[in-house]
Image (cartoon, rainbow over the protein chains, first blue to last red):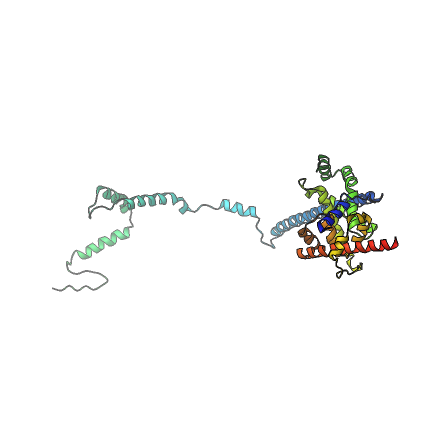
Length: 179
Length: 185
């Protein structure tokens, strides 16, 4: 008999072999299963209870901290500013005036950019547009009249010093004129 | 796998207690037969079978209907039995028959009609545990050497050599049994 024949012989002997288990085996198995499942459910319930307790404790701790913070701030022993107060001050704080100028400044910058982007004028000739711009930049006459009187008096005095002596200048520095 | 089994397994997966009992009654004789094959006593076989069924119901959700359910059950029992065997390994004693080899004359003299199932079973159980386990897994359960190696945590070549030695030892044992029977007769 070859090895293969021997193997087949043995395989055929044990194929579909069944042995009836003892009578109490079924009940013993399912009792064990029920106990295991009950224990599993208890462990799951305990785990859920622990998670809930931890959550409640953490919530209570956080709530207690916030209440303590408010009480101390009213006593003045600790300077704790609630976030809502910070928000309120932010809202009350006036907007700086230079922010109001941002729009014209940006407009001016835009105009400068447009000027810069224009092709440069040929030579040193002033165009009519340049004259118009100079006119716009020049202060109006009523503003010159409103200058302080001391400046006007100084100008008039300086002119009076120059008038009688044609070659003598009254200046902080000494000027010597040859010839 | 037939449609009845598929339906039964689906109901078991949903946790129906009656379906679990029905599944147990349908497959427990096969499971217990395998358990007895890999245990030293009927009491051990009961423990192995019960542990195996607990595993079956625990991992049934992971079973795919595309596979053989009976093969899956058989594998669970075998693995449970091997785990059980490893726990009791220190307390077992077996004969060392590494030096027993069958000669070609022995193999030729062996004829299948000489032995019945009980005698073959007795001869297999007389083998060292390592040989017997590999022989049963390969010849009776239909495992491949790779599967045996994974199950027993041994090398594939070790599985092959143990099977070869197991066959020879088994045939020698059977011939000896036949000689003793002849003398008695």
